[in-house]
Amino acid sequence: MTEWAAKRFWKAAEVTDAGSGYGVALDGRPVRTPGKALLTVPTRALAEEVAAEWNAQDEKIDPLSMPFTRSANSALEKVTPQHDEVAAMLAGYGETDLICYRAEGPQPLIDRQAEHWDPLLDWAETALGARLNVASGIMPVEQDPAALDRLAAQVRSFDPFRLTGFHDLVALSGSLVIGFAVTNGFRGAEEAWRLSRIDEDWQIEEWGADEEAAEAAAAKQAAFLHAARFFALSG
Image (cartoon, rainbow, N blue to C red; front, side, top):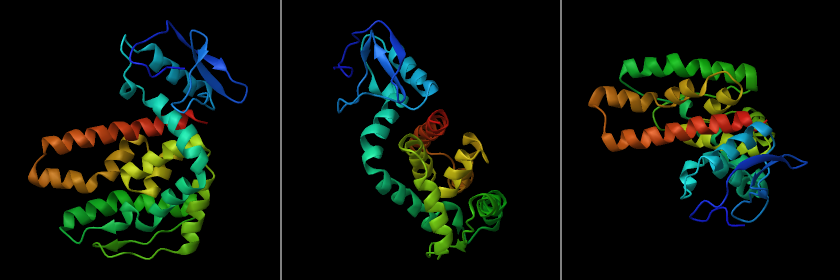
């Protein structure tokens, strides 16, 4: 199968029933991953997004314009065979969670972090059963091992597709709690992204925006919002 060939060779992409999930066929030929496995996703809604990406391709195929296809490929070829390793890596963010490390000054930044991040920690204690400790500055803060274990168990509970979306929510924000806040519906993706950018936005307010940094941040935001939607469509 040469679905990643330079030129489009099909007229229509359609969702198919794959028994254990849903696939996408190009003029009746099933889409496969780069490793030649059948591209099968858990929900029809996700398959429809994948099919829409294939239908939107012009004469020349652009894989970068197909984020749902790429995420599905990652779920099947990278996360599925390494589920435990990926889950453990993400759970590790609980030890160094962004929202646990607060500024030593100035006071307006300290107040802003507390205003927006303390409610997340309170929610995590109630909803996730994990109270994380807070520190000022860059020195490591010790977390309750039992709390970290409870968070890790919830990360491990995600199937490979949800874990793929969760991976980017956590890695891009730097916060396990923010990732959970999105997947549990406590915060919308747009707001959660802004919460992860409090420090950066403060610097922009103080010193002005850098064009290159702004472009990089916009790309990360788009990836974060995609991850949230990929997670939501995966179950």
